[in-house]
Amino acid sequence: MSADVNVAEGDGDAVLVQRIGDARLPTRHGEFRAVSYRAHDGHEHVALVSGDPTGTAALTRLHSECLTGDVLGSIKCDCGEQLEHALGEIRAVGRGVVVYLRGHEGRGIGIAAKIRAYELQDGGLDTVDANLAQGLPVDARQYDVAAAILRDLGVESVRLMTNNPAKASGLVEHGLAVDELVPIHVASFDESRAYVQSKVDRMGHRAS
Image 1 (spheres, rainbow, N blue to C red):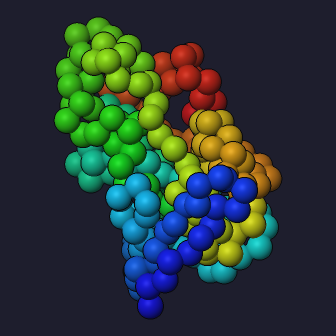
Image 2: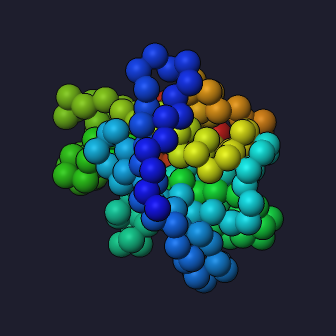
């Protein structure tokens, strides 16, 4: 049953998410619940839930949509590997959530501009300057919807699987406590090594 859920206590303007569906999803990592949402940002998002994440310290990954890495198998980034790692770790623990955030492609610039950024990177720019050269922000992502979804699932605090401290700050900003940052270590490729290093050097990410 779908329901509108106001989960933005203290945020000023209310953030409204609507839970649309909740179904069993068998995967190569084991069985998850797939909980779908429609949010105020116009995008539809999915939470992949293992076990009972309610309460504190739920192992959690906020995963930004990445068509090239998650679906097409690109090795220009480490997104696909991070998603697979997170699903495996959460299933092994037996309790946690992957929030798959639509509209975050290319750190929020969209797939068309992201492919243009790839073209600029092939010409010598790094991932930061490739966005700036298009007059676009380095990172346009927001995490209000992620906090809304987690709160709707009954999550009070998370152990956040990320190398990006900005994701933790984004959750805290919207009232979701972060107990711990859990680094993600995945295999690197020659094609992605410079990209990953640029995130460390210029965006404050932890080394993977």
